[in-house]
Length: 609
Image (cartoon, rainbow, N blue to C red):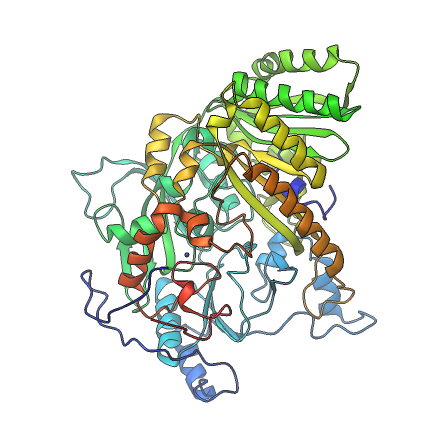
């Protein structure tokens, strides 16, 4: 897989206009907060905390206050410094990048942002550490940043001159046989669940829930993504067509709000805060310290299907796309199938899909009609042979099993003394530190799969692929999912279009790591701008058949203008109301997050209230 092709880095597996108007006391106990237009302070400016004040904060958090600087400051032209060399060596290891509070999993976005370390970080190990950091930031008018996994493409876990709340070390996972959210006895029945601290990665949760607990939890496809960030953004995994979004399966959260209070949020306690955390975007309403997610019975099998087809002509490619669309509607538009079909220039269709609840033989039988259609044509060639793999579901994230049977599919954390159960999918490791050229997405409505609409869809996909590659993520649209999964997702802040979309279309590209100060980092901005323009043309072709399409907040255009509508649609006014209630002064700021329209783009200057 080429690092520059972010389309291929998407977990392919083998087997935030409403303004704050009032400073009155709040109904749910957040209390009165002074409202002003005071800008946040930077190092060296009047009001920046003195060394003695930082020392007091350090004592409050048990010594876990870190003064940060770029790991590349020690790099010389010859790159002989051992610390620099070691960092460069580990730059493609997402576990190592995540363990570095100075770094983010993406090094930046052309003409948008570049990864810069905060001035200080609180390496939180408990909720009290988060409380201390929030109170300190509020009292001293500091820019506050929150980072767990650090996977934000839009740079929301990154800002220079800020105080970072780094939750990486809050990573405990605990299973429940009969969990009832606080205050919900008699309202919500006991159910199997898992408690997850905010800094855990999905591999930590899958190890506990599936590999060792023989149950399923709906999480993300990339094992190194932080649990809290994914849930707050909505959260899709390979099997979301069956079990819904991660946000829709949130039962309860512990969250520290802007007044420094530790609150429980569930369906009956702080319900609007709870709803906002379910897809309203991370870092806008508070700092989550714990989440409790429902778990499910495992199916017998998880598996995957992979192959590639090349058409000999444009006419043949149009026919191939039309047949793929028709076949998807006939055979795959159901809870069993997720992941991707990818369309590229040069008339290439790549299939990398996953399934649940089928055996290998059943998967092969399902695909036989499509393969026979291809083989009967003289103008379409299978360039990568069809392969179906399946295994007992409990083995999908079982590192020991994968090392034995599918070693090329995974990339272990290869640092000395690294846990043996922590791995990334091989393709995901190659996107660590990548520099984004462009990234756009759009939900495609299931109406496009109707027989009288399929030709229009196929033509749009063909036109789109002539400009840049596009990938259809079928698991990131919930049309075709069971009623219970759709109903749970309906009660989240995620854009309502997800309920009626058969797929999320993504077009993207990027280049090699380009952290500031990194030796050899030379992003080609001219190429990046050409790529971004091509991606715009690609997505315009799809928006022509899906006008007013919303997009997924975590995988979207940094430069999106009407982002409130694009990310949340009709849900945005309710999210803005929750923001006014729980964070009226706007302590929590992220790019294009709820309430961010009240601030300058860098989050340092308040523009209105």
